[in-house]
Length: 304
Image (tube, rainbow, N blue to C red; front, side):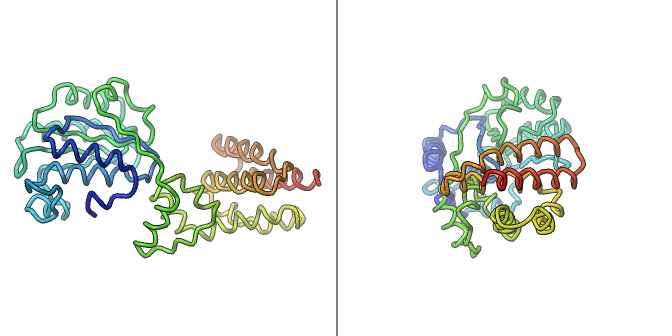
């Protein structure tokens, strides 16, 4: 992918492009926005621009630097991600710091991308702070985060923060089509994407589950609670994804209230929120789902 083909956030794209073209790239940046919105893609393309040796067009995708970058084999670029899928540890930051003391190999700069920066341990964050305070002149550090509040204030104050906006629904659909992905998502599914292409791809992969949620909500007024329980397998069998499915259920109910003016569904959102809290507190899973469906069914049918 080229920098110009990145989807959305045109202002940020122009800011980064101007920084490279004017040779005014700062030492530290922080890309803030929802998960899956494209922060890491932007960060990598920005890094490739910085490292590109072409004097006219950056990134050119043809010079030695760009070829090495595209093959994920550039000696002056390093990406740090959560080591165990959960946290970035101090050892990872220290290794990066050791590398920052080495001069660039093929470019004029060295770029370090710290993805999911909010997952840094306290020790890792404090260690990184030292490098941000006195970075070598050739070092650029880019942090990406979907939860800015979990990052030390002292780190945030030393970075140029760029806030990524949600991608418009029509651009998400265009992107999916251009990449050969079936873009036949319902209106509710597009709302659930929250402007994130990454989330749209995940939703598309789990489209059958989301369709079952919509069908289940539509059956609340038409069938008995016993039948509802029997047809709710999507909830009983999706323990790992249940919070996401419950969030989607809220969107479906909200749109019913908004479009069909069915006020009796209003309490449903509160019922779902209570269920999420119980599940996060490790309440019995099946009993929580049973209770959720019973309360939703009662709320809808007792107010006919």
